[in-house]
Image (cartoon, rainbow, N blue to C red; front, side):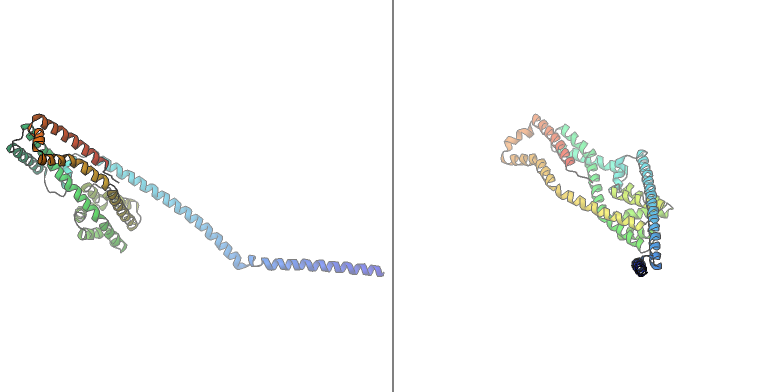
Length: 339
């Protein structure tokens, strides 16, 4: 009987110890895991899950909107390029007829022809009075009619384009600041036309005149790249046309355009500085034969006189000038970097 009581007491003690250990383990586990299953924690986890799901859905929608907008912009660019190619293909006027207006000159085509003939006749008469052979006088007549006037118009046109590129980013900045302040695009262009220097102000004023006549801005703006055929003006026309058809932030687009214009200008300055050595070498090589001839005419006039006074000498001079001109044109083409 005593042994049985001892066995029952030891078994009961073992059960109590086991139960206490299980309760302790459950209590410790519940204490550690309780914060994770609290109402606030579950609410935050649920909210976080919902926010993540919404952000994923929002980012997916944003990607879809961006892709759709990109496709729309690409389609608009293709349409604009096709329209520009059709206009160039169907143009009836010769190319040089546009150069006179692009150079800032108010000459008509008959006036240009009269000036060309007058220039050629003047050089021809000077050559005849100096006693030059008739074939030299005729060659100078040809150069005076078809060469010098066109060269003058070309140089005026190039200088006007350079002045336009110097002032064009400032005009775009004026438009961007006006749009950011809440002004309409037409009023911003009016301010740019007033505040900008020529020829930028004159070109914007021409666009405003077209708008006052009832032409939409998306069409009137294309007169700038037509009158000033540069990539920078074409960029402006494309940006405004796409914004008018596809929507979007015009101030941001024009701000990026202004930054691009200034970067292109900086790059052109770097290219000009790097290529200056090659241009100097070409100038020295091109002027060296003329300088040697001038020195020989001073030091040994009898020696160089045979080249000028004889017919064969004049023919050799003509051949030499032809090849020299061809070489100068080739060197100019090689060092004419464009971006």
